[in-house]
Image 1 (tube, helix red, strand yellow):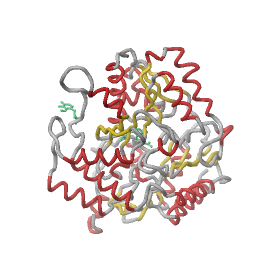
Image 2 (cartoon, rainbow, N blue to C red):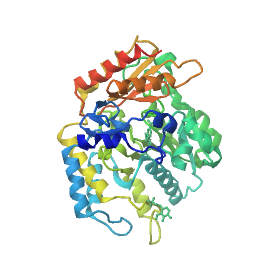
Image 3 (spheres, rainbow, N blue to C red):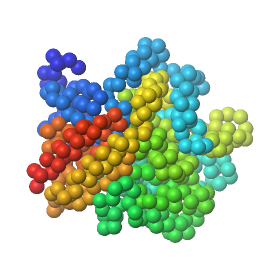
Image 4 (spheres, helix red, strand yellow):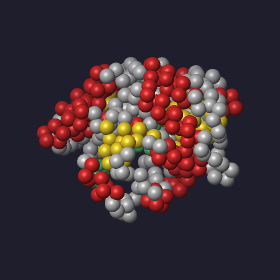
Length: 445
Ligand code: PXG
Ligand code: PLP
């Protein structure tokens, strides 16, 4: 986008596009349009620079329009625009799967590709049920999710998610046979925790004390956990909690799925949260940062023994009746390979010093008006504000709007404001984010 194109951008007709997860009427009355982006910054339609404090939507881990990724997409588009992966192949998804397997948690070396996190989640649910069936445990069809978790918007993902607003309108069409564990957010014991909160590991016991006895393990396929619930409000798991869930699942033959759509690709200082926490799930769903947001791509990373169960199934023929037209799309795979090169060459999965500066920045907001909690882990964090009486979410939204006006993009999640900068951020970018939020909080009533 050149400067001379900017007037055309501001004349855009906003009517016909039905925007996703957006208050369309509010947005169209007061639009925010971005014309281009480079590294840490957007340029708006008016030509203003805005710092991206959320990796756009928790995606752009390598920063915007990075040369290696841009070049890979350009080259691929001219060479092989599309080849299906349905009983046909091209080298890129094989190469990408090999690259992912090389940095994956131990024993997880098979990769199934989708186009989004939502598709990855529904794929993982199908894999879990089909796997148990192949092993003669076809009664294992129930799923366990958690309150305040987000697992995308397809029917399976909506059913296991725990964000009430995303479920309410669709109640009658959700999957039967889903229970939800309690969420782990407990400000009364854990407010202003730096890193993982100290209290709450015992909340994992609910799985063994309530859910398993109620349904019997022989009917339960999988537990799905987002290691940090991002859109649920940036909820950091208490120390020991994920380990305990793993132990209980193992004891009862329940598959453990980590939904790492946001926690994957370096967000917590390792390729996957599973490695950061030292917990080995059976399936990992991923998306977003795999291409640094440049082309849609998601997938499921699978324990080798699960894949082998499918490959050893009796009889010839297709092992898994599932796939998307664009599974393994060449442009997406090319972008992902280039993103992984960028992460690797720039050491973006181990920004320990930056995470320490980030923690200090998040907690510098303590004591400002309305602030009831600050929390962080790796390069994800949030400040929680007390809600306005009878207007939940409004204080968070106003903070977001005022930050945008002052050149910083953050995301309101209810009355929390979330931070998730690209991993290429420098201390000065973090200082700009938290300095701006601090200024704004002094003006929000
Ligand atoms: N699982 C998790 C843990 C996610 O964060 C998805 C699945 C779905 O991915 P797709 O690619 O289908 O969107 C996500 C996505 C928000 C927000 O409000 C977060 C997401 C998506 C949209 C909005 O913070 N995360
Ligand atoms: N609907 C129809 C009529 C289709 O033919 C297809 C794919 O062939 C789909 C939906 C699913 O589309 P996708 O494979 O891109 O998810």
